[in-house]
Amino acid sequence: MLSKTSLQIIKALVELAHLPQGQSAGAARVAKRIRAPQNYLGKMLQQLSHKGLVVSKKGFGGGFRLAKSPAKIRLFDVINPIDDVGRWDSCFLGRKHCSEKNACQVHHQWSVVHRGYMHFLKNVTLADLM
Image 1 (cartoon, rainbow, N blue to C red):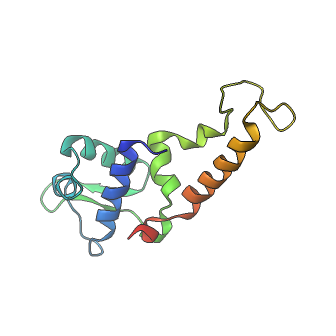
Image 2 (image 1 turned 90 degrees about the horizontal axis):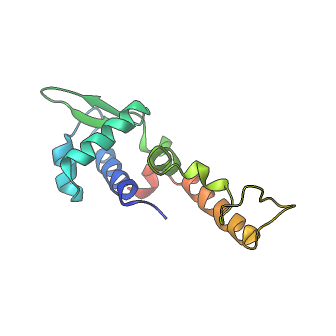
Image 3 (image 1 turned 30 degrees about the horizontal axis):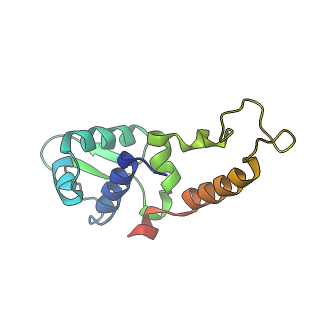
């Protein structure tokens, strides 16, 4: 249910979470450790810096580090900017008017899966994955 990009970003952030406090790692180092394309990973980490999840520093001794404790970064916070999972509350079959009162054929089954998945994403943190 996650894109390849989201999986790589999660791995990258877990890698950053293992760094000593205040230390940064370059995109090349992280990409090599998680076997991801360096340029693409660098762009994605930069995108997450704009969301306040990582801090980006250019120049000597620069790189990326987590902006807050791994225990305070939920999977939802990491993957929503990439996969927009917050929009997944719409009808599984794409109907415009699907609800408890006007349910499609799979509405009730999808609702259970969706609630469970969102609960997982909003309650699992990077610290849990370390």
